[in-house]
Length: 130
Image (tube, rainbow, N blue to C red):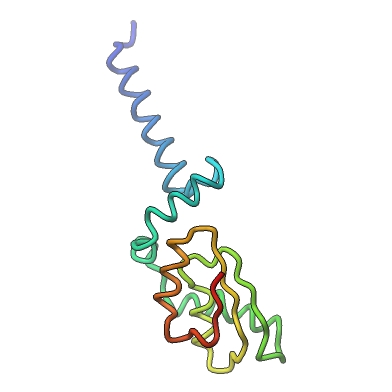
C-alpha cells in the first residue's frame, strides 16, 4: 500500500512549520546565530513584555531577591546587566526598598534597550544604559 504523495507533502509541510516555530519562537532564534536573535528582538521589542507576560512579583522574588541575597550586606552594589532586554532585572532591583546601588544595563538589541529606557525612565539616576 503506497502513501499518497499529498500525505507526504502534508507531513513535510507540517514538520517544516513545526521546525520554524521551534527555531524562531520557542528558542527565540538562538540556533540561527546572533544576527537573527538581535533581529528577532528588534522586531518584537515593543511587544516583548506583553507576549511573555512577565509578572513583577515573580521578577522580584526570582531575579532581584536571589542577587541581593548573594551580595548582602552590601546594599549599594554596582550591577552590570548584560542582555538586559526590556529591563526586567533593573526594574526588579529598583523596586527593592533596600537597593541603593547603581545598574549598568546593556543589550545588543537597540530596540529592546530603548524599551528598557522608556520603562525605567523614573530610575534614570540609578541606571546607565549602554
